[in-house]
Image (cartoon, rainbow, N blue to C red):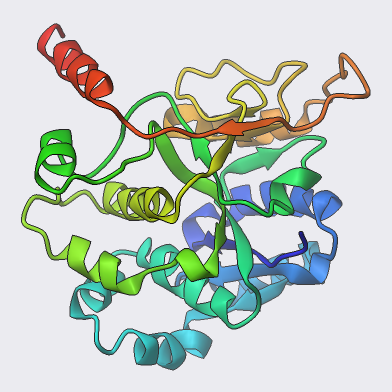
Amino acid sequence: MKQPVYTLICHRDIKMALITLPKIYAFLEDPNDFYIIDDGTLTESDIELLKHSMPLATIILRSEREERILRKLKNYPNCIKYREEYPLGFKLFDVPILAIEKATRFTFTDSDIIYLKKCKKYFTKDINTHLTTDGIKISIKLKYGLLKYFWKIPYQFNSGYFCFGVNDYDLDFIEYYLGLKEVKDVPWLIEQTCWGLLFARSGQSVTPLQNQFACQEDFSGPKKETLAIHLIGNLKKHYEDWSKIEIQESTKLLMPVFVNSRNINYYDWIKKVMKRILR
């Protein structure tokens, strides 16, 4: 399903983005559907480099969209506060608000993801799709999420890459969540948890196979089955070397595989608690 693709970048990550983002072009049905969201720190030099590297991409500066976004958020003070304090607010608010104006579905990708081969399906999904990682990383204790609020929470959810239907986006719920006293003040976890809860509320979703779309902190490097890599944790230092690797395919028929995602259950919670106790 053809849809707009968004990414969020800052001046700090421009060197990495100039290597990782152009790789997406080979997998888009229409390179004109690629949108780069500026967090407000891009310099004129950054913008020129991006335009030269990806001439068909649209760069949306913070100054150009600020009034439009704040108008949409005028009745959501918690959302405005989070967005003012943390750049990840642009991913949580600006991207979906802009996407709603263009399509019924959109894809988001972090700039620290290397798309190596056979990745077209990651940008054309017609069902809500998200990454899974190597642990349960959320901004609220599971005892509150499961026992107090009775939420469905995706298992090992990661928001580095996802495809999402705009009708499932719920500003009212995000405003409510950001106002809860139990939410830990860890900005990146808050953003990730909000997206995870939105996914769970939307119903069934799918996730790429972990051995094909790697998203683990202990990942040792591209293998034959590796199609894409999310450079989480200390893996960002490998963005240049791993982007250059030419992987010999084990078969020409290798294509992205997706499986149904699942929600956290009580056994997952107990296992997480025991692991913490035994450290």
